[in-house]
Length: 339
Image 1 (tube, rainbow, N blue to C red):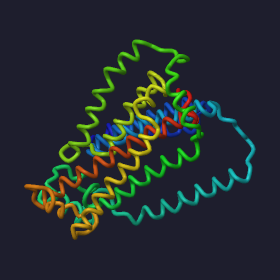
Image 2 (cartoon, rainbow, N blue to C red):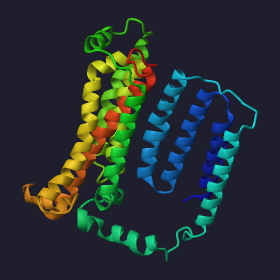
Image 3 (cartoon, rainbow, N blue to C red):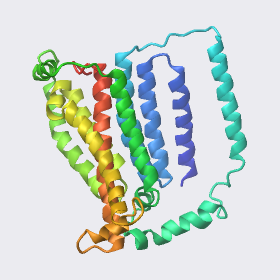
Image 4 (tube, rainbow, N blue to C red):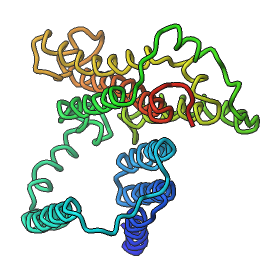
């Protein structure tokens, strides 16, 4: 790490954080928050956490910023300033202060930064660094930890993303009849201002974005990436279509029904691989037992193939949920017109 560069990035991060909560224009706050996420991406990458930086760039600086902007356009752009100190603000201030004090006190119980005698440095890290390839045949330690050593936890992270998408559907979606929905999708782009240059550039970019997303999913074992990052990039490609064309153009390619089915399918693939391991007589998500049904595969390689399978499930679920959240958020749940 280069401490001078870290200091500059951290200073800019703090300035962006204060600016985000200080400006009254919510659109400006969303853009500044995107810059904050981009700076965090640089910080993670400079610290050597390329996978975390990759995720921050795709989710925080990318899709997350678009979600914030969509929410601003569907609500209001200006903050209504209330200078009166009502009880709810006072209670919130007390709660935040109390939690901050508790965190500061608890921070003293953590080991020092890069302490070689901490449990993580003495036991966990050496085991993963030394045995990952021997036990999983996966060079990327981050992928082996997330998808194998703590695969049960990652499965529930995928379930949380799916639950978030379902919550957005339940809150924002406005039901319509099938015929009415078909008429809305078939209506085309008559009332949308079209920019031929932007649309042409989008048509060239989207195939490469989707191809790169598939590469990120397939090569997450050997390089930074995986299901979460690849799924977000796939979802972002459809969101780009919605931004440059319109909502109905994307619904013709990825209907709401297919979107919901793919979200369920992604979670089912992840949990289904775990159940298959149980059926074959091993523990849940113990991929080594898959060697019984995968031809010419050793138990170690079976763990690698099992991780690839669950990464595909994660990518499908994340892609579908990202598209579903933006579709409902940008159109206020009626699927009539996006941004």
